[in-house]
Length: 232
Image (cartoon, rainbow, N blue to C red; front, side, top):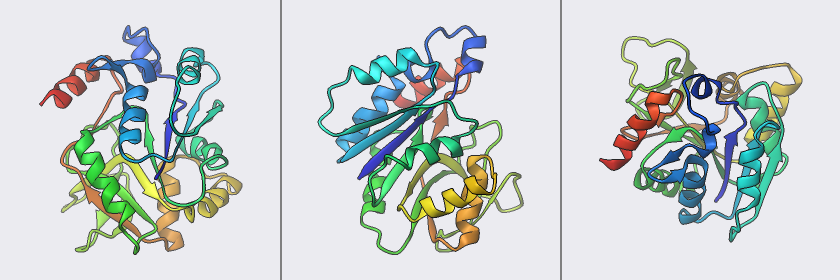
């Protein structure tokens, strides 16, 4: 499995709330968030890891360049206007085939992630598998509509009667998605959620995989919440 991490945000909210370290280097259980993700990916049979950081994150870039990994590390240093644009730059270095993308501040249990990756690696029916969760932690969650077979039918900004899941910020897909991504860029589409809508509109078959809890680290108080979650 190939993996990719978006770590191109500036972490401005954490900085405003007194967190001195860049978000990717904030430690959880004594390990930088980005290092934790990399190590989990390595334990989940990583063949390559592609990461994008913004041009101002010199500390993060230096940290990544200091790593001695057993698989190729494709590092992109680029400031982008959105996660969708970050993925577009990553698409130029991610090897062909299946891959899994996550944002650096998405926190999940390793055993849950492994089960999700195993499910996607053995799936021959779908073009992508989205990690979804009934646990709503995001300030502006992306709601995921599914049918009885957990096929994704729509991505919505607002909750509706019967809504069960929100996006967990972890996306496994095939490189078929890159053609849709290129079209989004050419048409001036912005935001990752609009790219996800385009995938469904184009007819790609996306499956939802439910994980009971995934949390984000957006604020200083979220660090302790993430620590407690992982310690459970």
